[in-house]
Length: 195
Image (cartoon, rainbow, N blue to C red; front, side, top):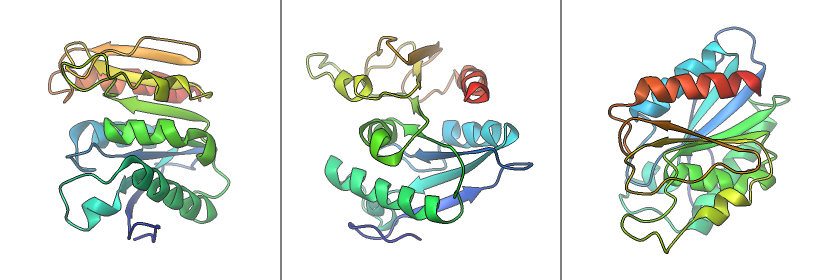
């Protein structure tokens, strides 16, 4: 448990299989948790590559609430966890941040403040379903470090384009990656190995 300005968050640490060479912090989706299949699969492959992984539960989840907190609260809580872990268990390790859906948005918005060396976005919600005019592409565009977006080809939340410092890996399926988990793992493995 880690204190934040908006209540306690929880970080579940998974040490690298051998000596840690980097750290990966991942956040969950708005209505999901850290047990999501893609987060668990990415954790396993990252550990094989020498990353210590921290799966972070936002304070609203720890408190048992279903409704996500506002963006500024999510970002502030995330940065409090980053600061805590960088002073302790992840001290001295290069840090890649990321998450699934809402967690990916938080990682993008806070990448500079977190000192992230890269950002991993699983199912980035480029716009609300059926509302492409409400694009969130500016959050991705603002990230100045390398970004990998892994997106289901039929994701109703849109398909972000590749861009400067941004790769987009398209896998079968939708926002939940129910059919494309192998593709997710392969894309993440290749990208993390280069960091």
